[in-house]
Image (cartoon, rainbow, N blue to C red; front, side, top):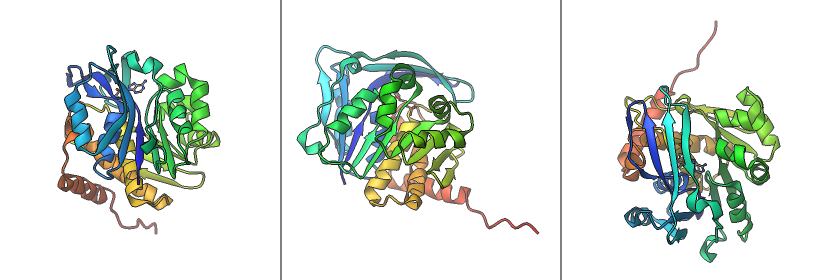
Length: 308
Ligand code: AMP
């Protein structure tokens, strides 16, 4: 099953209460692609960077079976740059700087080999670009998942609403679900957002876990309690990559399988936060992924609770 991953490939600078990074490689599509690469192997990247982006990093992506034919490298231009600072709870952050650079005029051109994709992950990016990618496909994918953030709600809301109307699953964090819907209750927010088009919504609550909902059902997965959390950047994208990667590999889009996909996304995200940037998610082995999934199963395992 082929999977297109659209999103930023970027430079980030991150400040947390426990340390500060230099300029390092990040970007939504980077985390999504890396997470999905542990689950499925036909991953086609769509993004843009400048000629300041390290070619060794692109080689590492290719070694993980991430096809970069749809990645534009613009001569003489600078890559997208984002700087963020986390609050003490590590669950909320302020964006200190966003330099769109190459993203400002990005016009994605899908290689022919991408156009009949089965799964489409529209990672966080300008909603006009997300839409342009959808318009170039020769058939409707089996599943389209979209992730976005407040930056695009503030700067391109109409385009975002138009794009959201065309997708199956929206992944979004709790604050952004409230902003998009104007509702404080996440249940009401989810219902309102589903009325905008998506059949499913996943609300990411950082260290408070993730909620999967459709119009009649709900499933909750906690985040794994970890001893060391260094940098939450990319956790949401890693989650999304694990979620869609699992579904693409299993070819089963039932609600029960989406629950498993939420667990997989959460397990992979738990690695990302342990180190700055992509360091931890770049080189995982099967055994440690399996151990995290077992930890998950133990964490939420209990017998029925009876009331006399
Ligand atoms: P996450 O922590 O999962 O929400 O994603 C963090 C990643 O999103 C960082 O690596 C940034 O490069 C990227 N990012 C930050 N702002 C934007 C934006 N406005 N559009 C697309 N990607 C962004």
